[in-house]
Length: 470
Picture (spheres, one colour):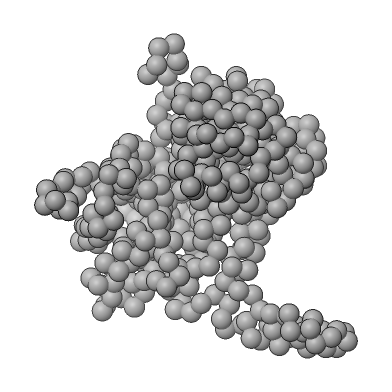
C-alpha cells in the first residue's frame, strides 16, 4: 500500500459489510441469512497447458458456486493475471445478489484462470479454455443444469465457443441441451442478438429510470431526464462503449473518458465516436488533440475528479475509495463495473448527499440476456420465431382496418431477437428501480442497502419454502 493511504477491507469483506447493512433492514425471518452470505462451493485447481514453444505452464484456476437457491448457477469467466480466490468469491457473491434482486432464477457463480491473456497466443488461449472446460466437466462443476459461465474480463464470444464445443464433444451424445453450457457465444454457436449492447442499454436506461422519479431527483437536487447531463466515463470496453452510445442517444454529453494509461476531457463535450475511432487505431488516447485536456500516466485519475453530473466507473473494482472520494465532484455515481465503490467511500458519499446507483441494478442487462440465451438453447428455437409471422399478420390486419397505405403495412413486423432482449431488459429495470426506490424511501436507507434487503428477502423465501435437506 502507498505511504499515507488508508487501508480498506478486501473486496469480499466489503461486500459482506454491504450485505450486513441489508440484513439489518429486514423485518421478517432471518434463519437462512448466514447460509445466503457464504459460498457453497469453492474450487481451486491447477491447469497445465502446452505453450506453442513446447513448454508446459501450470496455471491456477478457480470456480465458485456461491448459492444453490436456484439452479443452474450463473456467472462470469475471467482470464486475468491478478485473479485471486477471494476476488472470484466476491464476484460470485455479487452475482447471487443481482439474481435475487432482479428475480432471475439462477444462483450466483464465478471463475477464471490466473493468467494475462495478452501474453498467450490465440492457439494457447484456446487450449487454456478447452482444458479448463474439461477439468470442470470432469469434476461435475459445469453443465446446462449445474453452472453456466459467461464472458468477463479477458474472455469473449470466442472463448465461449471453445467452451461450448468442448462440452458438446464430451457430453453432446447424452445431453441434448449441451449447447446451453455457457452464454455469450457467437450467433452461429447458439448465441443471441443484442448480447454486446445489453450491459450498455441497462446502464443508460437504468440511469434514465432513476432520473424519471421525482422523489429521487428532489432528494439529490437533480433535474429530471438525461438530456443535457454531463457524463465522465471510465473505460471504453464493451460496457463503456455501449453505455456511451446509449447515453448520447438519450441526450447526455460525454465530457470525459478515462483509460488505464490515458484520458481526455472537454467540459463542452467530446466527439464520442471520434474518440472511439482514435482509441481503436492507437489502443490508447495518448496524443489525442481534439480534447481540451489529454493526460497520461499517473495523472489519468485526475479526470475522475472533474466536474460532471454523472460519473460512470466502468472498469474494475475499487475505483472510488476512502482515499479519493473527497475529490469527486460528480452529482451521481452510476456503477457500471462490479464493486467500483468501497464500503467506506459509500458511507462518505451518503453523508455528502451524492447519489449512488449501485452496480447490481445498473449492469444487470447482461444477466437478462444470458437468461434469454440459456432459454433459447434449452428450447432449441430462436426467440420470437414462433410468433413473428403471426404478429406481422395481426399488425397488417389492424393497419388495413385503419386505412393505412401499403407502405405502412410493409413496415409492420414481428419482434426480432434484439427487440425481445431490449424489451426484457427495459421491463426488468422499470420494475427493479421502482421496487428499490420504494424500499429505500420506506426504510430511509440507501439504494444499495435497499437492493441487498430485497435480494436477501427473495432468496430467504426460496430457502424457507423449499425447506432444508438434513
